Image (cartoon, rainbow, N blue to C red; front, top):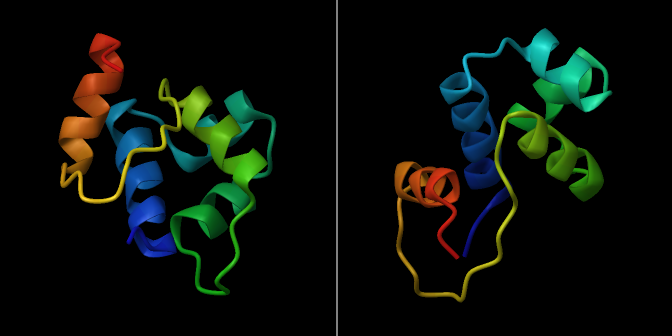
Length: 86
């Protein structure tokens, strides 16, 4: 099962691979920098899906749902998205 911590890591990795600061990503996505910080460290256990999608898109990524049991690394998922694999 994917946890919020896994999703937070995916977002942080996508932002860093896009070479964006939290402030730059926030501006591109139209959200506050504090939203990016909260989404990258979900200590309160909540995460807005709409904000997550906007942030991932601003970092050049799409959110994909994959069947349980597909064990891929964050790097593999991001590489697939860059290539346009489905």
